[in-house]
Image 1: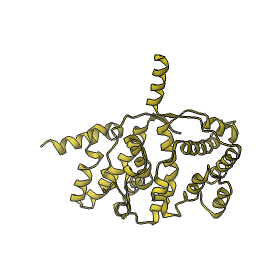
Image 2 (image 1 turned 45 degrees about the vertical axis):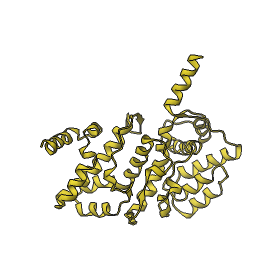
Image 3 (image 1 turned 30 degrees about the vertical axis):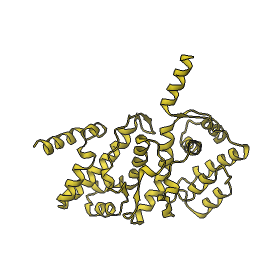
Image 4 (image 1 turned 90 degrees about the vertical axis):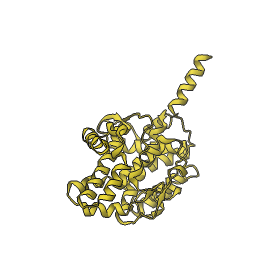
Length: 295
């Protein structure tokens, strides 16, 4: 009995979710949705919307509605309707869509879409990866919106999105910030500080503050594997976020905005030595921090 209880407690602590059972029609339509999305990952065009809408069922209704706004054509993508955390069953369905799409880019894959969908629906998946996958799939649409839309009046409150804990809030933020500020690194390399500042001025707030003041990454890190490497989640995603904030800081400092540059530095991850390990510039960050705080 003690062994059984111990196993149950271990599984609970790992936040594993598994086995979504779909009716035949739901499964058939889910596979069809996978095929439509895999051939148009930008989810754009009237044909895409028409195709996915014909595949809607009560079980897949929210998934279909979300797919139709992934092209960034609807500013409501930034509303709680889409930013709210889905339940675990829906998260697993999104994971199926992502896995089928990824398998089509794998030259070694010999499985059909149906086989992959069945395997993933029955698979034990780390809940943190399920959450990441959903918000990763929103990234493209959020990025497209940010190209044209002034989001500065929008305040995204992570405490009101149904996210379960600090880990999920961090995962959410890292995916949203990736869509919004990854371009800062490119603009910095191209030496276009004015353009970077123009984009920064249009960003939404998070929890009533500028994006760079989000520093909630002290949750337990976990293994993460992408197409490039096997690493940890924060090493990859907090590492990318560091590059964006550093680029923003450098642009402001270059243009003489000393007060804002100071605010960015002291209120961001740039002054959080416990997080420097996630940055490829950790030694430089430590040296700057030591100089800035030695008095």
